[in-house]
Image 1 (cartoon, helix red, strand yellow):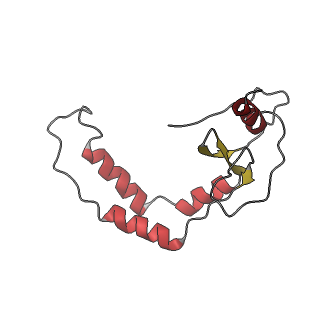
Image 2 (cartoon, rainbow, N blue to C red):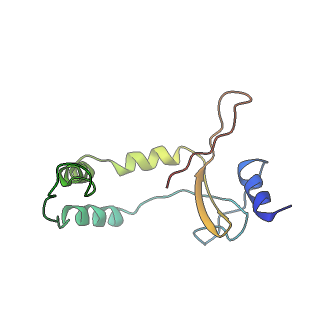
Image 3 (spheres, helix red, strand yellow):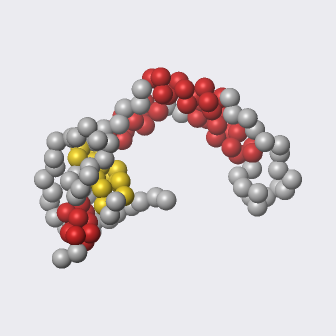
Length: 129
């Protein structure tokens, strides 16, 4: 059997024995390791400081999205991130789900494993990017 297929089956199909977390950020094989992320207060303060110190380019010369995201949209998002967004609340919500890390085909994956409350539910994989 193709080792890539067997790793995927182990990760997304059959039950997997989870190894103890290692000191590495990601597993080096088909092993999955439990994961929990906690941002340091210093990292969050640094991010907030860098967002507040954003150097904005001149305004767009068009009124649509053909030159990218309009600066007024980005400024509003940045204002939300620096004045209203609560990372700790988001972090707690993420940590309420079982999270794991693994490596598949040389790529590192962070995933949540959430079972459906419905018996016999069709498994689903959602990803971004």
